[in-house]
Amino acid sequence: MMESKMHSATVSEPVVIEGRGLFSGLNCRAVIVPRYEGSGLTYYREGQPIEAVVQNFHEQPNCTVLSNGRLSLAVTEHIQAALWAAGIDSAEIHVDGPELPNHDGGAASLYDAIAAVPDESLGIQRPLLTIGEVLEINDGESYIRLAPCDELRISYSFAHPELGEQLYVSELDRGMAVNELLPARTFITEREAQLARSAGFLHNEHEEDALVLRNGQPNKPLFFSNEFARHKVLDLLGDLYILPFDWQADITAHLSGHKLNRELARQLMGMYETARSGGQRG
Image (cartoon, rainbow, N blue to C red):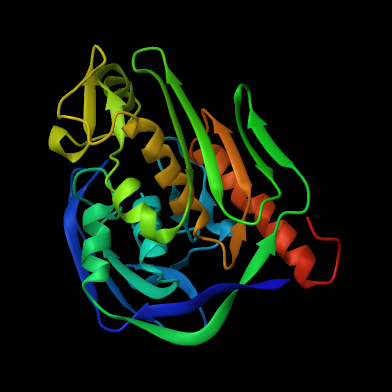
């Protein structure tokens, strides 16, 4: 097991983020506080801990949910993408509400709040998992493929019957993500929103909280011509920041979303545990 160039860090003082829930429409509040005993993210709801570990993934469409078996928290991916970009991997996140606060469906304003507070190094280098052979997971025509690489980069292809095709290709690092990925907003078509409301997944009627598309046209101007593909990459980075190590690979992804992101996180965690125990590396 190698060591990453990144040191574990926490926030030096509490960070307060407030906003309406993306799915619930309820007022939500998160307070990110320093954590000095080891690295890792732990959420708290009603005073109960919900650790950000792969074992606590709760299968649900449209977003990522973490659960301790009694309580759950939804939409953890956006704040984790912001924490990844800010280099914060150790913190307690105390949440009032059923999900993390949302602003416009992206993660840029969440990052701005976190980055406004100086970070504090814990003096611990994060482990680095190297990918030794091709790893592919798929679900129908959707897939994520990792190939060995000495950096982290991605080619993500998006396609939708109403929204067309988009491609995003880039090297991935924290610096570029701030301007190139974090502003990209979550999106939904009007028809998908109606179906989600009928299924009980969506209770938010405020369209300014995300991009809503009618007949392929967004309710607000796009920040990027390939904003949908960029947001999918944002989600991937946020979902995988649950892992207690850095990793590098050449990623090729097609039509993938939270379900495959969660499975990839489980696969990588298994590879990490095998490498730590002295077994065969992936």
